[in-house]
Image (tube, rainbow over all chains, first blue to last red; front, side, top):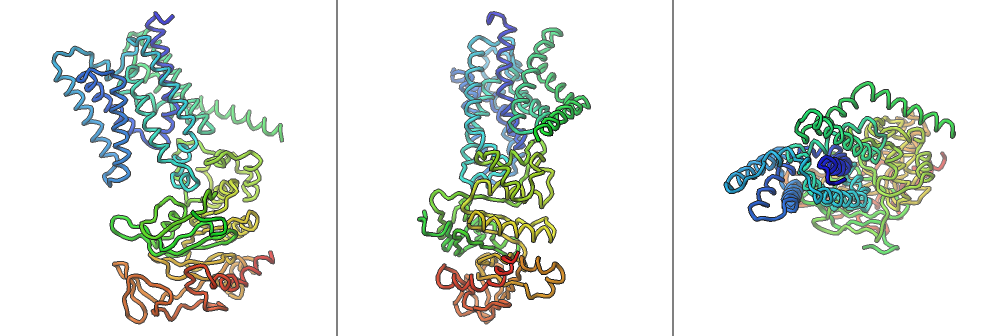
Length: 279
Length: 304
């Protein structure tokens, strides 16, 4: 079954979406969209360094993303520099630096587009395994740090006052982000990773009654987007990474439409009758 | 770390410095089980900073901030900045920092009178509803120390009195120590055991004065309400200079102002029976006097 390139692409895409959804919820809740963008742009620098030092690309991307995220965490805590200017500076300078380093290696013949926009149809069995094992690891760790991370998202001082360690949870969350960027770069590319994190989460908002529910719905919406985008790219021969993002966008627009509102009302109505029956 | 016989939390000469400026310094404060301590003072006077030191959110840059080992804290911050993308119901809020059983949560919500809001989104609550939901969350944890940051902000006056009543009832029921921040210089809870007045440092501390005799309050809010409210008449006898030093009434200038440094002559507390309990910096003989001094307010509250 894994011999088929389309099946492999689908499996890798579904695995990525399942992880990106819950993580993306935190990105949206904490208003870290630009932060995610910065990390993913820095990933290209990781790719360049991987070629330069001939090391594993996924590993190099993880290392660079992790370094940048920890550096940002430190800078945010100490420097008074405006956060969005700092992020913009880091995002685009690391992207440019990565491009310069890559193009300076004239002996290298690589498909730059594949790194920028993903090359999901070219994923190997190993890639699929990395996505699923890495993804399960990320979800497991996220489940462990969920309560302190969520409490810190609502109010960091409250979490700390009541004996939690939100700073540690933040740090772990940043490392999870770096992991997701490293494993999903092949699927949608560095320029579109943030879209996979944010759009499903935003689309899930109107259907969710609680944070945990929203994380699950975001993962499901992301998976539908992957399946839809891949099918569309097969049908109309469009580039698969952007097609997945466009499919996610379509789902987001549907979530804003009256249809979604009607669905929500139908569900809350059902819940109310249910509670009414119990009472 | 403090031992069981010690206060729940104790600050000794504690201060916090940021960017070369002392936000607050020289704070002596202790909260014991079952005791309500109210911090009052204008904005930026260091009340919140002090509360954060007591909570351990901020580290003391000078002096000491100690808490009992394993102290269970319930904290009610002024507000939560919740993004609209975050679906958070009151029900889910209850188990924010620790798992709380459904019965515990329901009991806490009933105690603060917001059972009907269990499924409401936290973002949509009014000021008073929000404070009650946050109080419910804090007491569901069965805290030993309850810290409240301006719980009556954005609440109308009747709501304020009801909230103060509620806080007193919570203290009576679970026997926790309460550390309360109030932005209001004039009105504090009658059930308060000790009031600490801030202005970049601890100006003075002592018992609040009940206002049951104040005709103004009786007329405005009724006898019942007046028993919940006390005026702490605070006569400021010294000026705070821009550089943090203090100019006293007698014209001398010192780095801080301390009780009994010979510069204070005119701290007058309306109906205070025992003038000795002014400036009770450390727990000691003054403690008894402080409780005695607020007898009016307490008896008024027990009538209810």
